[in-house]
Amino acid sequence: MKIKVLERLLNIFFPILCGICGKEDFFSLRLGLCGECIRKTRGIGAFSRCNVCSSPLKGKEACVFCDSRNIFFDRALSIRDRNDLLSEILNRLKSRKEFTLSIFLSSGSRKILRKLKELEFDACVILPSFKKRSWSSGKERPFLASSRLCKEARDILGIPFIQPLLKSSAEKQAGKSFSERFFHAYRSWKIHPSWENRCPSRILLLDDVFTTGASVNEASRVLKQNGAKSVYVLTYLRTVD
Ligand SMILES: [Zn+2]
Ligand SMILES: [Zn+2]
Image 1 (cartoon, rainbow, N blue to C red):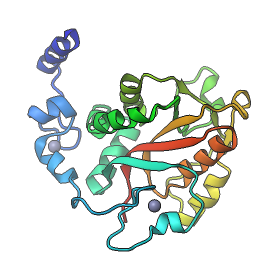
Image 2 (cartoon, helix red, strand yellow):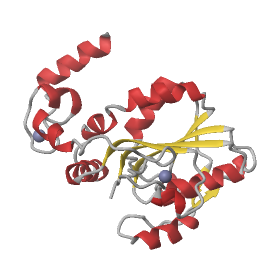
Image 3 (cartoon, protein in one colour):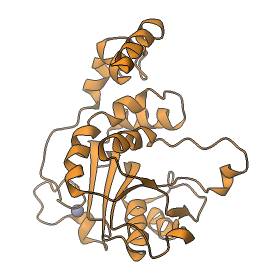
């Protein structure tokens, strides 16, 4: 209740403007995005999806994604399908221009997380996007776009966050071709020595976007090789084409 009052006061003195067009309305105050921009984020609607990776099937019987490789995660879910505006929102968030946009990106996560709660996860893992050494020496800690999603997961699931994955390559996935991403992902993660062969059984893996799925798939493989029995993935966005 106290938080609600504080939010209202903050809205009066520092209203949250739409992180894309700068307009202030009922929605921007609550979600960081105005009503008009929210409408533009909407996808083309429901279609049948693969029940493992959530790729649209578009009338095809088999899932192209799951059929073409070994899948190590049990299920991948995303809050929204990515379109141009949603990509822009994520880019702005990543470049720290508009932190309030993470309120919008994570909206809808609570509904999914409440369903996932039935699966009784043991721990949450955030996919690290940087090498630990690069910030541990007193430098500013890199910003994690999925931090709001982590907060929601923490509130709803009430399970510990652990960090058993280490990024072994400092290269970034963005800007790489589809095949490069697969090759690159293969050597991107390794297990933290203290988690070797002792990962918790049921893990929820969080990341900002599911593009080719290479990163989360490879991370799931590493987690399963080290004791995890099931790995579910949740991201803000996924690419659907
Ligand atoms: Zn707007
Ligand atoms: Zn699939």
